[in-house]
Image 1 (cartoon, one colour):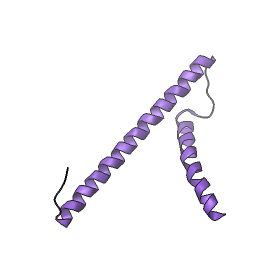
Image 2 (cartoon, helix red, strand yellow):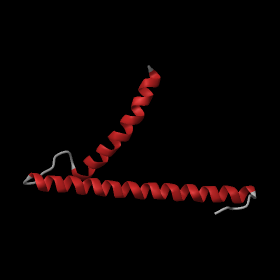
Image 3 (cartoon, rainbow, N blue to C red):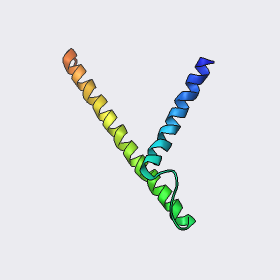
Image 4 (cartoon, one colour):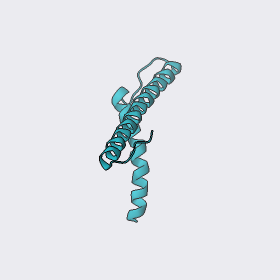
Amino acid sequence: MKGLDRTYSKVRTRVEHVFGTQAAMGGHAIRTIGLQRAIVKIGLMNLVYNMKRLLQLINRDANAAKRDLINHHREGAPVVA
């Protein structure tokens, strides 16, 4: 049972972090006049979230590449680009 809970919690965490971030950006209620404006507002919030997430992933990969270069240099191994 614990293994199943662990599997569910990994998925739940991924989804809930997205909703939590978007709630922090614009709240849970969309206050607009008209459905089209609400759709645009939600779409823009999604776009901003995705842009922020892309920057996080780029920074994560850049930091990992830096660590790899430093470790290769320390080990005396030739650096392959």
